[in-house]
Every structure is written in C-alpha cells, then in structure tokens.
Picture (cartoon, rainbow, N blue to C red):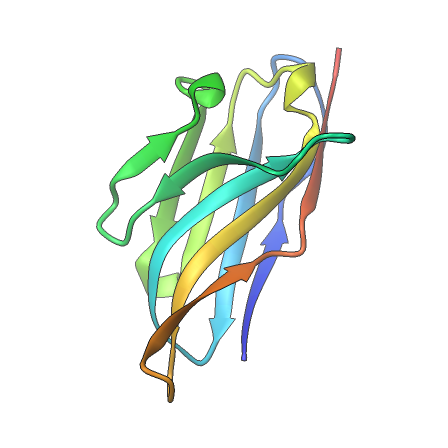
Length: 121
C-alpha cells in the first residue's frame, strides 16, 4: 500500500508565507511526477504545480513567481513553498504523485488527504 501524508497548512495573513509537505510511503520503487492541486469552496479542484523526478517544474500562471515546488527523491517527499499569499489562495491543497508500486511493475496515481490553507485579508 502507498500513502501520501500532507502537513504544513494553516492560517496566515495576506502577504505571508506557508510551506506544505507531502511524503509518500509504502511499497514504492519509484516516484515519477509529483505535484499540488487545490480546491476552493464552490470550485473544482485545479492544478497548481508539478515537478518531475528530474526536477523540472511547471506552475499555473496565478502562482508563478510566488510559489516554489521542490522535492527530495531520497525521501519521496514534495514541498510547496508559498510566498506573498493572497486571500484568493485560500483552499484545500492536495498533493498528487505518480508512484511505482513494488510487485506490480506499474505506476499509479495517489492523492494526499488535503490540507487547509486560509489567507486572511
């Protein structure tokens, strides 16, 4: 079994910073792309950022220059550093990973449990 466990959310004032963590654990032989999505109340889940196993990154336009995604391959962990936060960044943030599972020889999609980020004005 594979699990993604998130931490690091919370309440912050506009202009502040938060760092999200997401660790994949279990019968993993490789973690491919890892990333972050978010879902605000009344809205669909939307993609925020992705990082490949080689370290290439992509960001949604609304977070470029403010958020930084990174990873530690040895720990199968992905991070999201969020700076200059705005009230419209308020959402539940979900990590996502494409993970190779021992014994199957295949890659599967996994999601974290979600972590609330609230930015006050």
